[in-house]
Amino acid sequence: MVPQDLRYTKEHEWVRMEGDLATVGITDFAAGQLGDVVFVDLPEVGRSVAQFVAVGVIESVKAVSDLFAPVGGDVVEINAELATKPELLNSDPYGQGWMLRIRLTNRTALDGLLDAAAYKALTSES
Image (cartoon, rainbow, N blue to C red):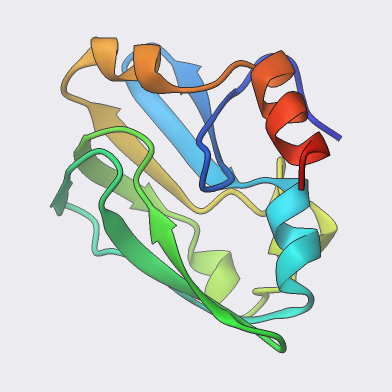
């Protein structure tokens, strides 16, 4: 499952743009690789983040993985529901399992992300 309207990173994050606001999450592929997610640590609202830098942690029954910011900017919202329902990353990664929203500082950062076709090709190699 790779929605066509999103952009992707090689580290398996997705981005949905609405104006200058980027909603960020992990892909269905990543959620499947992690297994059952049991804990999520997200950055504080107001924090400035740089593109491709670790901004959080996802802990599952199999592993602990960093969450990387696919774009740079200021964190304007986090999905507080993940504190009590981290399993949303597994059950609805592109919907209720969104992780954070970043106000973009540089729209050209999107140029370095993958489209759906390129992301499908990347994951089919795994």
